[in-house]
Image 1: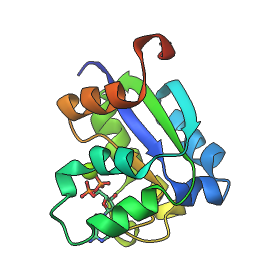
Image 2: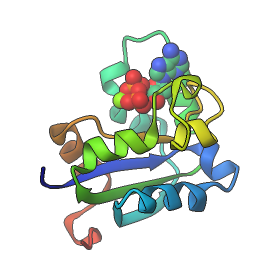
Image 3: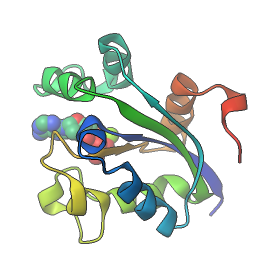
Length: 140
Ligand code: DAT
Ligand code: MG
């Protein structure tokens, strides 16, 4: 295992319900350090680029609409095995299938409004971090 960085988004359903602190507490409890964080309103173009891998999926329009429905908090998380660790903290994509104690089990509303995003691999994490943060905004 190694110290990694992963990219996280606290989605509009989380900011709308004032849950960013509760989610950050779960992130920090898992040993991940929030080394960059900012609140932004995604544009439609930014959301479409971010989720381009899903553009042929039937839920793509709903997904983009959900991501721009309100502000998000974009983050870089650092720690041991951060990508896998954070996917574990997130829980399954569908909150009904997520384990107790995970962000999605405790806070998500539905598959579409599932409160947070986490990168799925080292290469996608690097791409996603670079999309949202310049190097000097990340302070480890
Ligand atoms: P994850 O966010 O767990 O990596 P994913 O990459 O498969 O999941 O999908 C990206 C997001 O798209 C997911 O967080 C919520 C949305 N999504 C996925 N499957 C969906 C579905 N069947 N209906 C509606 N939204 C869906
Ligand atoms: Mg994904």
